[in-house]
Length: 161
Image 1: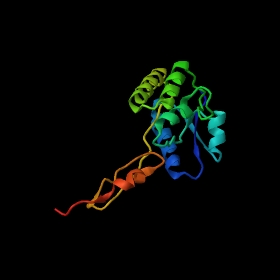
Image 2: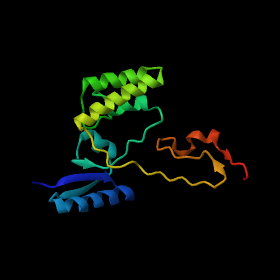
Image 3: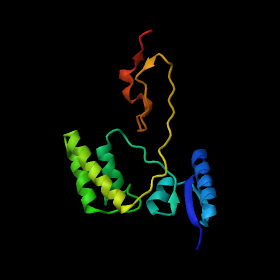
Image 4: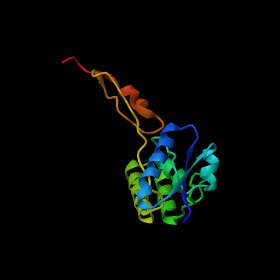
């Protein structure tokens, strides 16, 4: 069996370390991996020129529209060309809903179908680090594009105690 090709973006030390660790961890299982860096992540993901690839889907807090962009059958960001008309329908209903509760329910239904189809295996959550003085209140992590400052209007100083 030829080695699986695992790709990552040239110059990204964290992703390089990640693929090296994956390669080392699967070797004892008899799985051989060839690490093949890319300097064109968009071209590589769009062409499907990989067996495994390390990249991140970093979304905005508006997860309803992001779901369609990532998983819809006709989306250019659906790199593996996943197609499930029921998932498409549920995501579209979520994205066009004005009621957050039912929209979340639709996304959860779509997520369950995606999990059943085992279309993609996320390996880990992109780590985010946040530090604040002890007297700063409401500073917390948010792994979206907005980052930790998504709620900066809620930050304040704790009362001295």
